[in-house]
Image 1 (cartoon, rainbow over the protein chains, first blue to last red):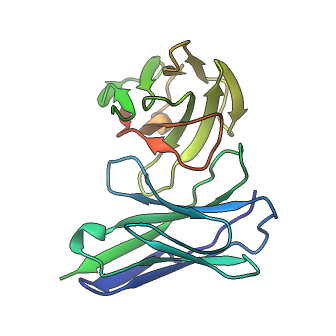
Image 2: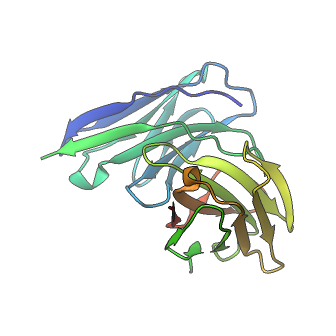
Length: 109
Length: 113
Protein backbone atom coordinates (compact mmCIF):
# COMPACT_ATOMS: atom_id res chain seq x y z
CA UNK A 1 0.00 0.00 0.00
CA UNK A 2 1.31 3.42 -0.95
CA UNK A 3 2.20 5.57 2.06
CA UNK A 4 0.94 9.14 2.11
CA UNK A 5 2.42 12.22 3.75
CA UNK A 6 0.44 15.37 4.41
CA UNK A 7 0.87 18.41 6.68
CA UNK A 8 -0.24 17.89 10.26
CA UNK A 9 -2.15 21.15 10.39
CA UNK A 10 -3.10 24.23 8.37
CA UNK A 11 -4.71 27.53 9.24
CA UNK A 12 -6.88 29.71 7.00
CA UNK A 13 -9.46 32.47 7.10
CA UNK A 14 -12.99 32.50 5.86
CA UNK A 15 -13.30 33.16 2.15
CA UNK A 16 -9.81 32.01 1.27
CA UNK A 17 -8.88 29.12 -0.98
CA UNK A 18 -7.15 26.27 0.82
CA UNK A 19 -4.83 23.82 -0.87
CA UNK A 20 -3.73 20.69 0.99
CA UNK A 21 -0.96 18.75 -0.69
CA UNK A 22 -0.39 15.06 -0.15
CA UNK A 23 2.76 13.19 -1.12
CA UNK A 24 2.54 9.56 -2.29
CA UNK A 25 5.89 8.83 -3.89
CA UNK A 26 5.42 5.06 -4.26
CA UNK A 27 1.97 5.14 -5.79
CA UNK A 28 1.30 2.16 -8.04
CA UNK A 29 -0.10 2.21 -11.54
CA UNK A 30 -3.50 0.92 -10.47
CA UNK A 31 -3.82 3.14 -7.40
CA UNK A 32 -6.48 5.79 -7.04
CA UNK A 33 -6.34 8.85 -4.78
CA UNK A 34 -9.20 9.71 -2.50
CA UNK A 35 -9.84 12.36 0.12
CA UNK A 36 -12.08 12.28 3.17
CA UNK A 37 -13.23 14.93 5.62
CA UNK A 38 -13.95 14.23 9.27
CA UNK A 39 -15.59 16.36 11.94
CA UNK A 40 -15.13 15.54 15.64
CA UNK A 41 -17.08 12.49 16.82
CA UNK A 42 -18.39 11.77 13.33
CA UNK A 43 -17.43 9.28 10.68
CA UNK A 44 -15.28 10.42 7.75
CA UNK A 45 -17.10 11.75 4.73
CA UNK A 46 -15.97 11.12 1.16
CA UNK A 47 -14.95 14.32 -0.63
CA UNK A 48 -13.40 13.44 -3.97
CA UNK A 49 -11.48 10.76 -5.84
CA UNK A 50 -9.24 10.78 -8.88
CA UNK A 51 -6.64 8.95 -10.91
CA UNK A 52 -4.90 11.66 -12.90
CA UNK A 53 -5.13 15.31 -14.02
CA UNK A 54 -8.00 17.23 -12.45
CA UNK A 55 -11.29 16.27 -10.91
CA UNK A 56 -13.88 18.76 -9.72
CA UNK A 57 -17.15 18.35 -7.89
CA UNK A 58 -19.49 20.68 -6.04
CA UNK A 59 -17.28 20.96 -2.97
CA UNK A 60 -13.65 20.57 -4.04
CA UNK A 61 -11.11 20.06 -6.78
CA UNK A 62 -8.36 17.48 -6.90
CA UNK A 63 -5.20 18.18 -8.87
CA UNK A 64 -2.91 15.28 -9.77
CA UNK A 65 0.30 15.95 -11.73
CA UNK A 66 1.45 13.67 -14.50
CA UNK A 67 3.85 11.68 -12.30
CA UNK A 68 1.05 11.13 -9.73
CA UNK A 69 3.54 11.29 -6.85
CA UNK A 70 1.48 13.96 -5.16
CA UNK A 71 -2.00 15.39 -5.20
CA UNK A 72 -3.60 18.63 -4.03
CA UNK A 73 -7.04 19.03 -2.58
CA UNK A 74 -8.37 22.51 -3.25
CA UNK A 75 -11.23 23.94 -1.18
CA UNK A 76 -12.55 27.19 -2.68
CA UNK A 77 -13.64 30.00 -0.35
CA UNK A 78 -13.62 28.08 2.91
CA UNK A 79 -16.03 28.82 5.73
CA UNK A 80 -15.90 28.12 9.45
CA UNK A 81 -17.75 24.86 8.83
CA UNK A 82 -14.82 23.55 6.80
CA UNK A 83 -12.78 23.24 9.99
CA UNK A 84 -12.10 19.52 10.11
CA UNK A 85 -9.49 16.83 9.58
CA UNK A 86 -8.75 15.96 5.95
CA UNK A 87 -7.34 12.57 5.00
CA UNK A 88 -5.52 11.69 1.80
CA UNK A 89 -5.57 8.00 0.90
CA UNK A 90 -4.25 5.87 -1.92
CA UNK A 91 -5.84 2.56 -2.76
CA UNK A 92 -6.35 -0.06 -5.43
CA UNK A 93 -9.75 -1.51 -6.15
CA UNK A 94 -10.51 -3.94 -3.37
CA UNK A 95 -7.79 -2.96 -0.93
CA UNK A 96 -8.59 -1.67 2.51
CA UNK A 97 -8.35 2.08 3.03
CA UNK A 98 -5.44 3.01 5.28
CA UNK A 99 -5.92 6.30 7.09
CA UNK A 100 -3.02 8.35 8.42
CA UNK A 101 -3.40 11.11 10.98
CA UNK A 102 -4.63 13.58 8.38
CA UNK A 103 -4.39 17.37 8.15
CA UNK A 104 -6.21 19.44 10.74
CA UNK A 105 -7.60 22.51 9.01
CA UNK A 106 -8.64 25.43 11.20
CA UNK A 107 -10.65 28.17 9.54
CA UNK A 108 -10.87 31.42 11.47
CA UNK A 109 -13.21 34.40 11.01
CA UNK B 1 -32.38 6.85 1.33
CA UNK B 2 -31.07 5.59 4.66
CA UNK B 3 -27.39 6.02 5.24
CA UNK B 4 -25.19 3.83 7.42
CA UNK B 5 -26.69 3.32 10.85
CA UNK B 6 -24.83 2.08 13.89
CA UNK B 7 -25.95 1.05 17.34
CA UNK B 8 -25.51 1.71 20.12
CA UNK B 9 -24.14 5.24 19.86
CA UNK B 10 -22.47 5.13 23.26
CA UNK B 11 -21.74 2.36 25.73
CA UNK B 12 -19.66 1.74 28.79
CA UNK B 13 -18.15 -1.62 29.66
CA UNK B 14 -15.67 -2.91 32.19
CA UNK B 15 -12.45 -4.78 31.53
CA UNK B 16 -12.96 -8.41 30.63
CA UNK B 17 -16.49 -7.94 29.37
CA UNK B 18 -17.67 -8.55 25.83
CA UNK B 19 -19.38 -6.10 23.50
CA UNK B 20 -21.37 -6.35 20.27
CA UNK B 21 -21.74 -3.41 17.93
CA UNK B 22 -24.18 -3.36 15.04
CA UNK B 23 -24.21 -1.75 11.63
CA UNK B 24 -26.73 -1.47 8.82
CA UNK B 25 -25.15 -0.44 5.52
CA UNK B 26 -26.42 2.22 3.17
CA UNK B 27 -29.28 1.02 1.04
CA UNK B 28 -27.96 -0.92 -1.96
CA UNK B 29 -24.53 -1.56 -0.46
CA UNK B 30 -23.31 -5.09 0.18
CA UNK B 31 -19.89 -4.56 1.76
CA UNK B 32 -19.18 -3.53 5.34
CA UNK B 33 -15.86 -2.46 6.82
CA UNK B 34 -15.12 -1.77 10.46
CA UNK B 35 -12.63 0.77 11.77
CA UNK B 36 -11.37 1.69 15.22
CA UNK B 37 -10.51 5.30 15.91
CA UNK B 38 -8.69 6.35 19.05
CA UNK B 39 -8.69 9.98 20.13
CA UNK B 40 -6.47 12.11 17.91
CA UNK B 41 -5.73 9.28 15.50
CA UNK B 42 -6.98 8.31 12.09
CA UNK B 43 -9.34 5.35 11.72
CA UNK B 44 -7.61 1.96 11.82
CA UNK B 45 -8.96 -0.83 9.62
CA UNK B 46 -10.25 -3.85 11.55
CA UNK B 47 -11.84 -6.04 8.85
CA UNK B 48 -14.12 -6.08 5.86
CA UNK B 49 -17.10 -8.32 5.15
CA UNK B 50 -18.41 -9.07 1.70
CA UNK B 51 -20.80 -11.88 0.73
CA UNK B 52 -20.99 -12.86 4.41
CA UNK B 53 -17.28 -13.62 4.59
CA UNK B 54 -14.36 -11.80 6.13
CA UNK B 55 -12.37 -10.68 3.10
CA UNK B 56 -9.62 -8.57 4.60
CA UNK B 57 -8.31 -8.06 8.10
CA UNK B 58 -6.15 -5.44 9.70
CA UNK B 59 -3.67 -5.88 12.52
CA UNK B 60 -6.16 -6.68 15.26
CA UNK B 61 -6.14 -9.69 17.62
CA UNK B 62 -8.63 -12.53 17.45
CA UNK B 63 -10.58 -10.90 20.27
CA UNK B 64 -12.09 -8.84 17.47
CA UNK B 65 -14.52 -10.84 15.39
CA UNK B 66 -17.42 -10.09 13.16
CA UNK B 67 -20.28 -11.34 11.15
CA UNK B 68 -22.28 -10.30 8.13
CA UNK B 69 -25.88 -11.33 7.71
CA UNK B 70 -27.77 -12.12 4.49
CA UNK B 71 -29.33 -8.65 4.56
CA UNK B 72 -25.75 -7.21 4.53
CA UNK B 73 -25.93 -5.86 8.06
CA UNK B 74 -22.96 -6.62 10.25
CA UNK B 75 -21.83 -7.06 13.82
CA UNK B 76 -18.50 -6.41 15.46
CA UNK B 77 -17.74 -8.41 18.58
CA UNK B 78 -14.92 -7.68 20.98
CA UNK B 79 -14.15 -10.16 23.74
CA UNK B 80 -12.10 -9.74 26.91
CA UNK B 81 -12.19 -5.97 26.71
CA UNK B 82 -9.09 -4.00 27.59
CA UNK B 83 -8.80 -0.37 28.58
CA UNK B 84 -7.08 0.23 25.26
CA UNK B 85 -10.17 -0.85 23.37
CA UNK B 86 -11.83 2.43 24.31
CA UNK B 87 -12.41 4.17 21.01
CA UNK B 88 -14.90 5.23 18.39
CA UNK B 89 -15.86 2.24 16.28
CA UNK B 90 -16.87 3.16 12.77
CA UNK B 91 -18.74 1.13 10.24
CA UNK B 92 -18.42 1.93 6.55
CA UNK B 93 -20.34 0.50 3.64
CA UNK B 94 -19.57 0.23 -0.03
CA UNK B 95 -20.57 -1.75 -3.09
CA UNK B 96 -19.04 -4.91 -4.49
CA UNK B 97 -16.12 -5.14 -2.10
CA UNK B 98 -14.56 -2.01 -3.49
CA UNK B 99 -12.72 0.39 -1.25
CA UNK B 100 -12.99 3.74 -2.98
CA UNK B 101 -16.07 5.62 -1.88
CA UNK B 102 -16.96 4.47 1.60
CA UNK B 103 -20.00 5.73 3.44
CA UNK B 104 -19.38 5.90 7.17
CA UNK B 105 -21.81 5.79 10.04
CA UNK B 106 -21.63 8.11 13.02
CA UNK B 107 -19.88 5.46 15.06
CA UNK B 108 -20.26 3.73 18.39
CA UNK B 109 -18.31 5.29 21.24
CA UNK B 110 -17.02 2.53 23.53
CA UNK B 111 -15.57 3.34 26.92
CA UNK B 112 -13.89 0.55 28.86
CA UNK B 113 -13.42 1.16 32.58
